[in-house]
Length: 330
Image (cartoon, rainbow, N blue to C red; front, side, top):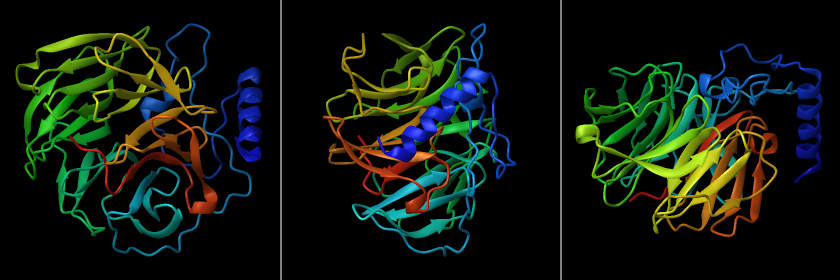
């Protein structure tokens, strides 16, 4: 963990001890409800998400829209209300996306290279064709609080609606709901495997669970998995069917292998509020956006060893999600 990251962790501890929740002086937008509410339902427990004051922070606004490619990392940034585009490996910021962005939360890249952003302030999901930075389509029908987005191999789009408590499916380029399922809590994450099984992470009053809809959402016949979390964030799935899930309350990124009865291990360390997680196509790198630190942790997969820590020096202000241009899609 870097010295700056350690210092910020100490500040979080001081804030929590004093019973004070601080907001950034630079921030005037409402926070995503899925971050504010973490563990707040528990008696005597403060919300786990606390946006830290960023003393002396200067938000750069001189970036120019530009093209993006398969070797880029796309970072949703709540602080700038934009998507920063970084070149992989060098992690140098090369462009941005601002058109169609309104409270960027989760993001995703599908098998055809289309990029999706869940805008909770929209509320909508904007889609961008490969190498473009202007939206080609907007999904918004029936959405109330889109915080996560995914797509299956056929291009169907799935929305995780936190306050609405449902996961919704849209056909590619069609703004009407094909199917919607209500698992019984606040939906935070959605992932689809190669068999088109849909995994949904959601939060209940006292815990968090994952439900599997076999073969898709049609009929909403879900199987409740055995693994339990404290407060679920986003999730991803690898080529072997292992689920990778953020637990915001325990500050961990958990790996849950089939048959999904328990957490087998955790990835990385030093998280405060891991929010969204994605996996590159080769299954060698995991990207974790920590909404409390506002940064992106790049981890080797499956070892979980740290590769890079992306923050202000990379043009990132308050990251909420990060996805590789060659995202893992099954």
